Image (cartoon, rainbow, N blue to C red):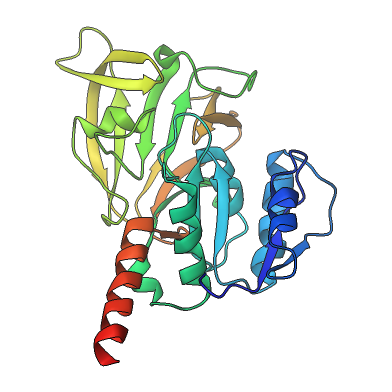
Length: 288
């Protein structure tokens, strides 16, 4: 309906894209990244890099914060329609699929400008010995845990500090902690650094840190981060969890810093994209 003639997709084992391609065979040409079907983060990043290099007009992701972080490591300026299918999601949206598809098609076919439909997200940057090592889109948690284990952060009592790009009351997960201190939205040019406290801390916040889970959390201190700010991590040994998954070990011989950047991916706001499309249709109707 939006004039899309070609879709470039990542091979996947569930068969979701294959079924969709069969339904629209002859109307939309579907091509696949030349790689085996795989569902680990490295495969996601590789597929995203290939899709961006192909020159697509919009990219659709299905997953959680971690999936979108893997996509974002590929860089690029392609607007992303991030659809939430994971847990503890802040970056992707809960959105009806048809509306998400219309928004993606409208952006890809140039029906409206990127500024009308999208916002540039922030990202947290992890520097080791002065070199950029990795990124996070929503949060970085500093933990006393020594091993990655199942990767997910379950015991908030192990956290010593949290860094956030967003802190919104309607979000769930680690970023919800910051929402009770200061609201920071996707397009606000700032982030947040929180030093965790305990049950004796003067500041206590009640936050939904996971599905069906609400914790009272002590805050020792917090402050706003501005783009370009970097904070040195003194805890060693320990782990950094990026967007909810433990990824980086804090070793004694490493100098680790967390910085805030406004160079994150462009994110399509489905509602804004549909409003821009409707406004363009009304204008065209009035002209005719």
